[in-house]
Amino acid sequence: MAYKRIAVVPGDGIGIDVTAEAVKVMEACGEATGRKLELVQYDYGAEKFLKTGISIPPGGYDDLRSYDAIFMGAFGDPRIPDMRHAKDILLGTRFVLDLYVNYRPVRLYDEKLCPLKGVKAGEIDIAIFRENTEGLYVGMGGIFKKDTPDEIAIQEDVNTRKGVQRIIEYAFQFAVENGRKKVCMSDKSNVLTYGHDLWQRVFQEVGAKYPQIEKSHMYVDALSMKLIKDPRHFDVIVTCNMFGDIVTDIGAQIQGGLGMAASANIHPGKASMFEPVHGSAPKYAGTDTANPFGAILTAQLMFQHLQMDEEAQLIDDAVLTAIKQDQTTHDIGGKLGTRAVGDFLSRTIRVRG
Image 1 (cartoon, rainbow, N blue to C red):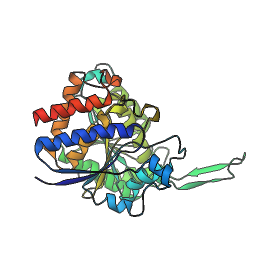
Image 2: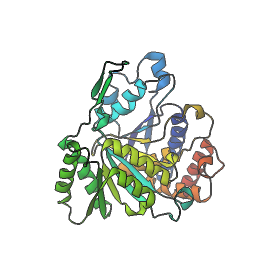
Image 3: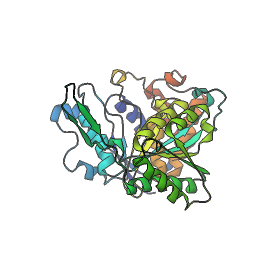
Image 4: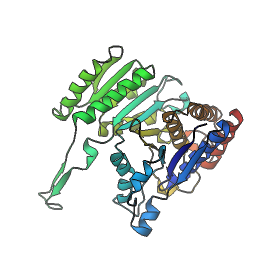
């Protein structure tokens, strides 16, 4: 069977804890299917940066792009208040490797995980696509007369036709390839009349190529309210970088919290990076309390991207079993620690494989 090389960067805090369990589950999948996986660990993170001043070494990005995929944990350490290392490692990988698709599935495995009343398992299954390399997150701008009463801070929002078009096209292509029926584009074009006018025009142009897909538009404030009132309304959502960051966290909450949220950072046909979206939560590091499901479901996303469908299905089945049997961490109603969850899922995968 095909041989796959995966770069693993655990990161900081609970990133290290949950990545260990994701690796455990990936290895169990490889054993169950007989597919060879080479998981290569990298020590990029706060500890290395504090000791050496190096966040990612020269040639580090080229090294990462030589893998079939990259798996990253969470980043953040109070000893580095400005998060310089995280900016280089995490955001740097997104920008240098041009990972323009941020994909966050919002799927409800069990109604007991959802804070909304009357919503059943299987009724929430949303694919959210966030433009990942432009917008307000490009770091363009500056501060004038800092720390004075006349201080001016400017943050620039960058939207290019190329960037907007390729993320909207990806959302429609995903819909077609996965049997989705609706694509909703969200912006704030009633106020951001230049940048989001571009989103409006490109969405109409690209959408015209897909007559079989129902197309709609919602301002992001209305979409946020609708996500909470009736998430069953949505199928595929595509939006800009900052709005995507916000609405995907709303999505995470309605599927069980950030501990259940997985994400993919994709450039089609090239090495892509996969990460759970929760933070590093330093005070919980090493306490065996962090929820590893987000990291493990991120591994599932990675397997899907690599067309390792059997491994992805093994993870999906094992996660559903764990949730049904309350073999979970405390935040979602169980009594297990981080490592015990990983052990349960690994055993389940080996038995079913």
